Length: 458
Image 1: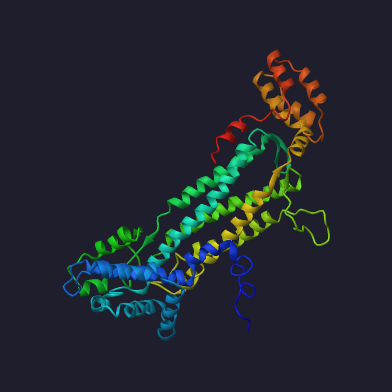
Image 2: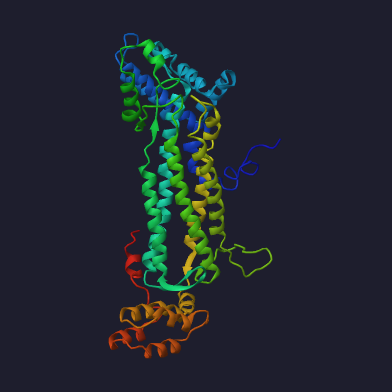
């Protein structure tokens, strides 16, 4: 059997693309998951010691510091120790509990409190809270990547705000825009979705085996366990307490989050495809990288590989996010285990998104506007002024304006300035309106495109 390495890894996320998503190992790896579990367990224990129970004295400042250090200083060796315990227990959360008890066994105060580790908890109390903590960090990292892309596109919007460009609707010539305005459209869409991603509230529960505090209340019937759990989840861990659950937190917030990320990725797929097309048309050049090869047989090629790589990996990310969003909120009766194995792939979904974002950033860094080609394309499409002319004709009551311009331009192919100007000369409209139309060119028929592009903030 081959030794595991980036060259033998089954997944490209741990092989070819390992560098692009290395940041996620500290968030979604098995070790990161164990670390989050340890943090939840020790904070639960600390909070219990502050509840006033006769059998559990308040843990001293020294003891609290030591308990928190178990999470703060958690490393690969710590995880390996837990995994060794799990080899016997065949239960990962129980292994975390036993590991914490081992770590405090040397301390008289903490050893005495150790039977309150995992007190009244079901495994899912620890897991769901840990997942919420992991996703909190994951969202922060993902939003930073998306914001970097949005900012890059917004800079293009401002840099190219006043560069006129021919639009194409249905693949056919259409009313002109500017290169910057088309960039601004994407940046604004993306910014809106980034805010929606940031607004998702992350829920967690610590209410026992079926969500009713059964074990908690049989042990301490007079204690307000709901308020206790809320304090730990909201004040200590910074999440939102879910009052009504089965054994598992229902993952509705995860579905909301993943759908929002999927929407952001869909905007970027749309952008990748448009830029790919503009590169094909010569509107953009790509900066050359020394030593890079475009084709194994055609030496002239500079392929838009970064945008293609981005599109492909965004597709994989969205397929995974869609499955996560559709599967996780569904559980048979009070729970089944199908969510557990699916949740282990949070990092995979984020990983493919990060690979895509890195590729897109590389592509954006190579883009150079070919302004001459953009202008040439626009100047060959004087027929797009038909919209402007027939609209002015409507204003002044000229009969059948649309039909007259349709007869002049539709399906006629290349229209020259001379043909357009000759038609304008025949119009019975005020002299100033006629002069304004005669002065119009495809490059000046851009409406508020420049203003709209410059509203986009980097």
